[in-house]
Image 1 (cartoon, rainbow, N blue to C red):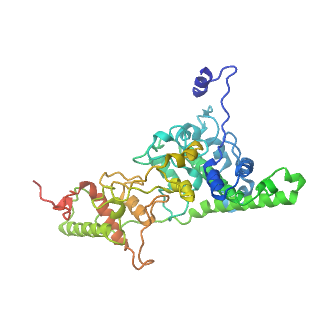
Image 2: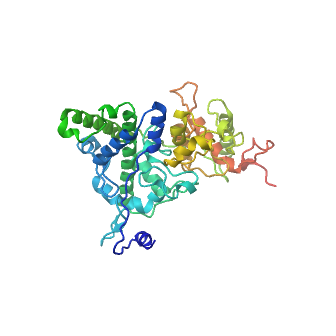
Image 3: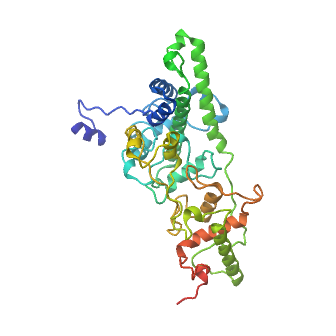
Length: 426
């Protein structure tokens, strides 16, 4: 007990040693593959774990795969120097440069492995992000793409409203950059692990096929070289998906200069007020219409009381392959014991609360509409001219106006068609 308290306090006594931090294998995915294919995944888990350690190192001593370090176009993706600042035990030097940043600020929620299952995760709603799927919700890149460094920096600086993700705005810029590198590192490591386990499910390791067997470096060098080449190719594929994301960010200048954006106490000219009223009416129509169809999930009054029985991709990842019933304790208990978090329904945002996890500025809401939210049931809106049946840019801004107005709009039908700023004062 005393040793534990001393370790938590950053002190030591003779005979007291801090536990060695390790990355935990993705046993949940391994069990899914085992059950689905009726195979023993233990050999694949063992070889995957060895490959990842040789490529990425340990929580106290991170590495950057040599195949990535040798690619010029990936040179700016992650810095080993910044990784080493973010990794390891918490400490600082005489110049007040901080080390162990991830363990100091992130590990208690996101976990050492970045699996979103840190010590406090079970108590949080929503759960912390699991980085290992390489999927992030709030970003400026198209649906299905990785976020940019700017996107990750924004989340770190702003936090995520309505969740337990706080703002780290007070951290130095160099600390923010180091944490961004470490998140990318954990995400790439986790995504490569998933690829290796999936590949391992197709091999008969007991019969002599191998994912990664360093013993063959001497006994069967050609076979080992082929294993290394295959893993290097997977690593490059994951890394390039991050690198390419930096070039596909959606740049939005905003609505036309003369376009009125809603504020509760809008005080424009009569013409501007008339145009804003028309925008709100259009936004309401699109919200309830068949093209955007926002009301199906967010509810007819925007209370988030539409479709509430679905799950996010992180839960479906292990529920769907085996058709598990998330309400059946007997079915899901074995997965919970291996580290999965109990599935929770993904509830659409209550737009009348005025709380938007992706940001509350008009441009933030615009991006969530046109880009969707990865890992959730929020799709990217169909847009003209790419889709002749989609929305125009102005219609998207009309929806933005309508969404921003919802916290101030009466729910009763008697006043639903009257903009708040245009109602008669009592």
